[in-house]
Image 1 (cartoon, rainbow, N blue to C red):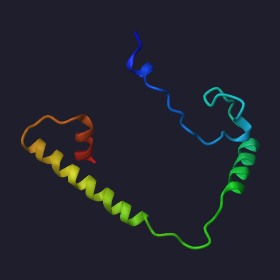
Image 2: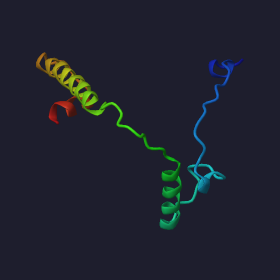
Image 3: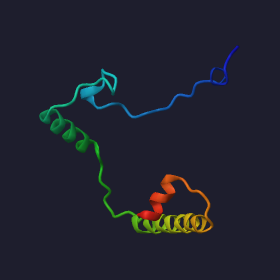
Length: 98
């Protein structure tokens, strides 16, 4: 009897090619690179990058503002739950403590 996962067609996920130095081996089985190999690889990766000729839109500060709003809202929800003596997850306690 086929399982649910077997009855679905496998989807191919397109991932970027591995760097030249480790392409022939599985990522978790690849050897650690020496300092010289790391320097060579860093140079190859840097050479492949293209820099924009003009400044792009500043997206960092608006994104940080969004993150702050989410954290503050979550903090308020968790704090309200604790004040009502509801149990909360350890991660929620961590948020209150930090």
